[in-house]
Structures are given as structure tokens and as C-alpha cells.
Amino acid sequence: MASGSSGNCQYIESEKGKILIDGGLSAKKIFSLLKTIDLRPEDLDAIFVTHEHRDHIHGVGILSRKLDLPIYANYKTWEAMEESLGKLEMKNIKKFSNEKGFYFKDMFITPVPTFHDAVNPNGYTISDEKSKVSLITDTGWVSQEIIDAIRDSDLYFLESNYDIEMLKNGPYSWPLKQRVLSTQGHLSNENCSEVAREILKGNGEALVLSHLSIENNTTHLAYKNMEDTIEKMNLKVEKSVVDLDIATRFEPSRLYDLKEKK
Ligand SMILES: [Zn+2]
Ligand SMILES: [Zn+2]
Image (cartoon, rainbow, N blue to C red):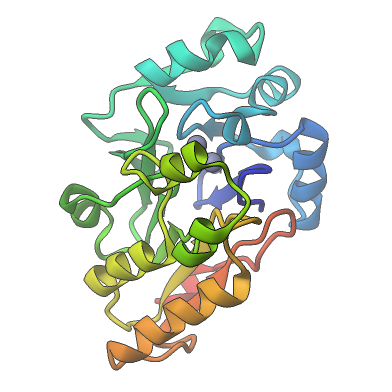
């Protein structure tokens, strides 16, 4: 529904569950985004948090209070964010360990540790009987463990944060440039291509490029970079081969019906 440093929030629904991954916008904004996909906020079952940065948790506390929603995050992330979320009902504080996956309703949730300047960030893979979705953003690099965890997904929501030339020549201060470029920063378009080369099969899987930087990337550059990568793999950007899309800042991208794909 929204992606990038001004706020992250993604919606995933299975047969039995409706969840948000992150809630990094105001509750008001999240409510209006939910409306655009015809979802009533009361229907949500939980929020899963990736890490404590404001662009991922801004509205999480308020949503939990307004909707009596459980918030799931790993132990260290809870320590880092609990204060900024405000007062919460004990029963809505759900802690997990990054070491193992767990069921939430009919979804099997696997936390996937990422590399980022937060205390203990993680992405997620979420599977049910029919499909698997992987969300990996806010990571300075992608390890073999991440690749193995996300392989065989029907939808990849992958960070394509910056174009390396734009970042180097852009407005950021040198320390900030170094932060973004580091292995604890964000994933470049080129890094994202390296991941794509490992995982794409061309069986109609969806690839959504996400968390694009406004200053150091353009949708055109990110898309073109991935399109070239896909073509070099002798695959095609086409719904039945690799279904490529970009998650924009505030406007929901289309809904992916993964049941329909099978
Ligand atoms: Zn972020
Ligand atoms: Zn972050």
C-alpha cells in the first residue's frame, strides 16, 4: 500500500487471516489506504513489524489501540520500539524469535534476518498451502541465507532503493551516503538484480520493486535495470513469465491474487 522512507505498509490476506506488514504512516493515512482496497480496518487481524525505524512503525501503536490489534515483532525490536509505540494492552504485545517460524492462523510466518542499522531487523516469508510471499526491504546486502529463505516464492517484494551513480552524485552528505551504501544500509538497483538472478525462474512469479529512494532513484531507472536483468536471463517482463511492478510511495499498487495464478 505504501513503500519508501516516507512510510511503509503492506497488506496480505490469506483465506483465514488479514495482516499488515509494518505501519509506518499515520493511522489516518493507513485507514484511507485500506479504503482504497475496500478493506475495513476492523477486519485486520494483526500487524507484523520488520524493524523500529519510524517509516515502519509510525502508526502501529495507534492502530493497535484503535482496533485492538496484536503487534508482532522480534524480542529486540520490541525493546527498541516499545516506548515510541505508547501504551499498549499486554495481550497485543506479541514477541517472536528470529530463529524460527510460527503459524498465524493459516499462514506460516518465517522471520528472515536482514542487514540494516536497526537493532535486529527482519524481513518475512509468509506461506499458506497455496502460495508464498517474501518481503525483503531495508537491508544493506542479501546473504545466502536470505536467498535460500525466499526462494520459490510466488511474489517477491524486494528493495531496489538507489541507483549507485545517483547516490554518489546526489544531495546526501558523505556520512549519509556511506550509511546507505554500507552492508547495514539499503539495497541498490544493482544489488536487487543480483538477487533476481538467483531467484527468478520465469514461471509467472511477481516481483515488486520497493522502498525506492526519492533522492537517489527513479521508478524508470529501477524498472529499466530490472527489465534488462530479466531479459539477460532470457526471460521476459510479462505476466506469465516475470510479473514486474513497482511499489510507489503512497498509491497502492495492484492487488496480486496468487490463488488465481496457480
Ligand atoms: Zn525503511
Ligand atoms: Zn529502516
